[in-house]
Image 1: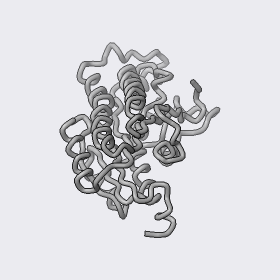
Image 2: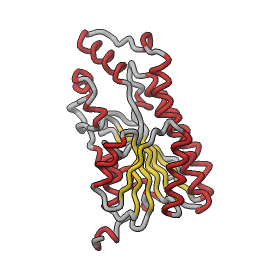
Image 3: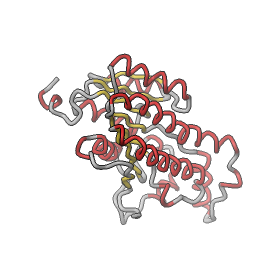
Image 4: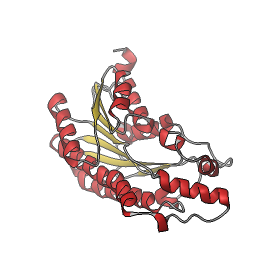
Length: 266
């Protein structure tokens, strides 16, 4: 390990990152390793993708994980505790969007009409988004708190969404799931700070991830406002997440940092 890595913000830390097979989660994992973390456990539903990212990192270990499976989340975090003796940093970046809803919105844009998504939103589509985004966040937060409380220390960062604030037309289930994520994270933050655990949220706007790449071009173009910064890179969002996880953010508890390039303010 180089001298620069040894002196990094996360030198000697144990970290767990969900959604680490691509996008923001992968960027967070890479940066944690670059800044000295002695162990970075990368978790993702896509087992092959997360193995590939973990293979890049000297301290990386991959876990195939569905965050919607509470037992699997508990087992994965418990394994970290057994193997490493504790958990210092937890970044939860796993989440899903709804390609069907996005296509309906894009088709409406091309056709010059208002989207009609709610009419076509079935129970399975609603539950899928809620199960991963909201239930999954609860499972990860709960497992992290259970592991960190005995040590009376730890930093948890959750990736939320700027859609909580602007509630995009035609995307009610996604906006609702992320609003729940924000509120839940803030409630947990106020509860666990007395145990030395800090919980904070990053709320990205459009970010150039694999999820964004699958967004229909008409909708991508609609979001590409020339008056503001372009789509964020995953690394830019990772920088904010890791600031929140670092000692420099010691006084930030229950914060929601809006990172949308100036599209709107709250």
